[in-house]
Image (cartoon, rainbow, N blue to C red; front, side):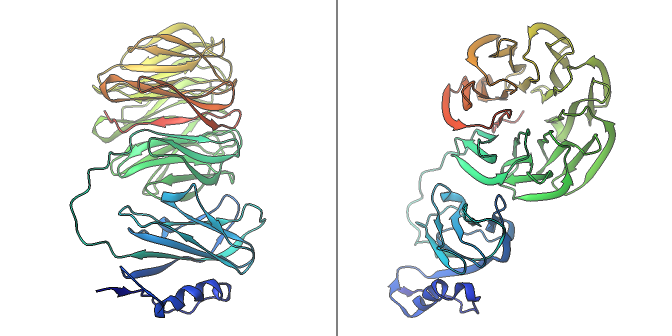
Length: 440
């Protein structure tokens, strides 16, 4: 028996009068194969450039989504969904609406509303998401392979991008100048931390989009790591102190002074622990966290930041540019000063490997991408953009993958999983972050 299209009749704002009433009138129109439902979201909210409104943050997430409607009061607005970000529709102007049609699937989806790129200032929006009942049960579909690797970076439009095996997504969220995002695999998916163009700490990903309302020091970037069912972030406050914030909103001021223009690095450890490495205000490498607090006494090159990783067998290792301009690493796996020269104003990255050991990626003094560690040492001969730093993550089977900004300003990948020019443009002076589902 065919079911008729069903809507809940509601009072609609004037901005919805034309298009929205058209959809309401469908309640007496042709019949379809499945009952349709609707729900308001971002109702009466405000959007502006770089500040979209997501149904995810209001719990308006559904399967079998058939479309999203949006109307803007003061300006034209656009609509898409999380699963269809490469496509969108926009209204024709103030007080007009637009409907984004979606082919229904079994995957959860939510509306994504934002101001028209040509508009300036903010506008009030009204959104409606539509979904249908699932089809009758049939043979079970083949399993969908899980999303594995993911990369975060600031594109050359100063917006947050996520790229990898889960696809390319422009989150349309503005980043602060001279900053880079970080990404971590957390319980429930991926989460990114970044300094927004407002100077405030923000997170976005599968656990939601949050503006934490705390400021980050200009020219520095936060670092994120998994913690239980949530995450923990380390960042430098405007006053130059190392602080942490958890996904539950708990802020801790460690009262540890940090060097200007440097950023902390945080890693998850076995048994739900964590450890931070940072350049102190006195120029020394310091670690802080559940594995202990220590001023190592190791001098760091001004304007550079360390990187820390947990190890498969327990413990940690830190990589940094010493005040001699050489690559050093320090931790429970050993303290070594290499003779490898690093490019000025760049920082190394280090990852633990699934089979034990670690691998480091860095920009050499000759501007090439180098790797160094227990998985081998190599000059890849790949040119890197000056003033940028690579990122590295461990993979299954003791593998590794590096993400970096090439000398041509594009996101490149290099490692045991493959070598690729993604053709994704990156903002000069910024660096990518990479994460994988393997957890030690």
